[in-house]
Image (cartoon, rainbow, N blue to C red; front, side, top):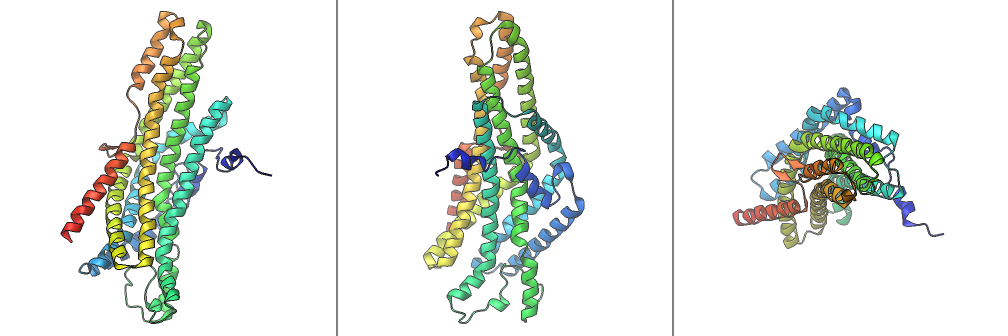
Length: 390
């Protein structure tokens, strides 16, 4: 029996809203409501050591352009992961009021009508798909780094294979690996790398996406309730007062969210521009040289970076549109049937909604679909400069 599409959509619906973000951040001890300093210490120590080994390798190969670019491709994202983890650790307490409101709303109910439920489910599923897909894709990239030497040896049928002395990750060996035992110990140390990097890259981002889509869904629900408000004077005033208070609460939450993640997203934006520039350059280089394995790897990597940049910009665009929708909803009511003193509340709502809420990157970039074009153009501009200089 063929199941409806709605059945599969419900599989990604998270009734608690923040479950996926909580799982990812709890692994590194960074869940704001249940901070674990010991777990965070071991996590950040492991990632810092790995990053240090990458930087040492980068400095050792600084005179070899091809190796330098390959090392930058892996070391630069890990540096960003360390910075993001530390910055989120410093600002994580700011998110606590938002989490309390989300838990309260979940208990009281996020929707009342089937139309409101469709809106809530759509944004909820979008947040869940982002968390799961980004975690899987970002887990796949470092895993591909790890397995590439093994695959290369299998394709070469072990002829002149240097696998026992080539680490899966391009990091410094600390000392020369001359035996299978030493090589195996290094490989064991590098096994958790993919998981650690994935947690650091997607944990805070997952919470940002989840909370932003939650705000979008509640702003959309609020707009629907304003449109459908009963203009009977005895009913209108108490309902409109509750809606105005809800609108003010959502605006405060949006401001807290922007303040918490602004500096973190600035680092992320610069990282996306720089990473896309480097990866596309390597993609062009490997395509010309005919290295199929490297080409496939860089295609996957560049697609993941572009998709991640688009998701952030799409996220900001949704928040802008939903916050602007309030003023249209107020104007769409039968305000002309109300007494003059009751229309003032609508005027205040329309005036306040003319300034949309948005996500920023360090107060410089406003995330929107227009910004996505700016990120791609900036990356291609730097790529052009790099090709002319090298």
